[in-house]
Amino acid sequence: MKKINAAVFSIILAVVLGSSSAFAQSDIPLVPLVKPINPKLIKISGTWNYNATMPTVQGMCPAGGPASGTLSISKGGGARPYILVFQSGRVCNPASLCTFNGTLSGNELVFVNEAKVDDEGGEVTNAFRLTVLTNELATGEASSRYLHPDGMECQWSYGITLRRKSGK
Image (tube, rainbow, N blue to C red; front, side, top):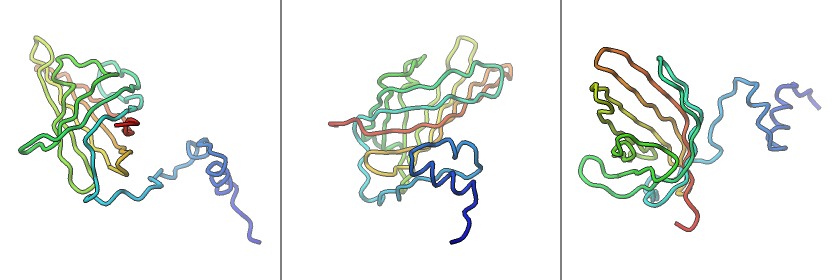
């Protein structure tokens, strides 16, 4: 029997035991263990639970924190055939920032929105890109950008996972 490298063994052991500590210590990129659903079978309309990771921030703005709650996705029309609305777990000021327009191409969902957010003319743009793995699971990355008319800018990025709300 060949010798197993200690790092490889610890990764195998972590997978078997359900621990992610070995992955946190390695440079191995995590990939979904699920082959994405056939795009022709995707049904994304409905209510979803979401979890967003702790954002990283560039600029002088506060980082914020991780978030979770519910959102809904419904059919839209025209150039943005899907509408996503955050229902809980997020503060949207103005309220329009809780509503995103989106498209689906293959297994990739892209949602965006933008708005003026203060009386100084500051603008926010938000976007996220999700890979639909199953009709119950989608995961991806999100980003937000604030730009003040005087040139001050902040950018946030975070991971986001959607799981179909049971019974919906």
